[in-house]
Length: 334
Image (cartoon, rainbow, N blue to C red; front, side, top):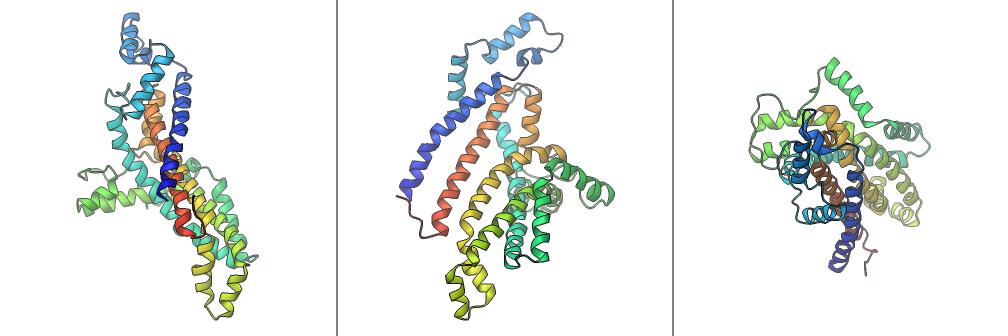
């Protein structure tokens, strides 16, 4: 297993190199000049030239690319054009809130999606099965930003059940350690902040979970249907095991491989989906940060954010592959 993990980590290096090259080239294609944007409408030609010199934008592309690779591998993305603060520090500041939102959405998707898929599979061709799959189809088809706007209007604006925006109540002080507000409130024992941050987290996390929840439910149903007809399950029932134990201990465990694959892929998409959710709900995080960076043509901030998300995708795929061997002992990696 150690050799496999090491080999996968080494194979991830050319993947990340390709991602960094693509990011660098795409950033160069963004219309507009960041130096002109920083100088403003009244900036002189000399000011624009000085800013271009400071940012290294007047260097040849190969030289810019070499500096970009160096900064990426050393995790030193330079200073943000928009805020003049180190990009690495700003990413650490916003990364915790985005991961917290994504993990909360994943938990909701798992808690609802897997049982829904199991129930649909064990009641195949029933009204419960059809109803569950129709709801799942609606969940897959509904854009996150549209669902967010509708639920904000109904649950927040009309019924007042949840806050309209923000990440914690106004006036509540919290000592930030990881910048994940729920976790920080637990670590510091600030239960007022805990209740407020959870209250602000529930609605955006549920909105973000709708598409992964539907996909996991459909994948669970499909995988369970393949397993439920196997001979060893009929043998388990013939031995007198309760149907509930047969489904949970035998069928679900053997159906987990494609489900784990779906979970890994969906967690990666949750991070990118969090960008839209944070914008709709006004939550500070990587989403709002990169949107503002794109508007300001902030090359270092955009590059740093994309690279952090790309590394997250690679690590998640590695964890999914390792989880296969833990779930199914028949899988052995050479």
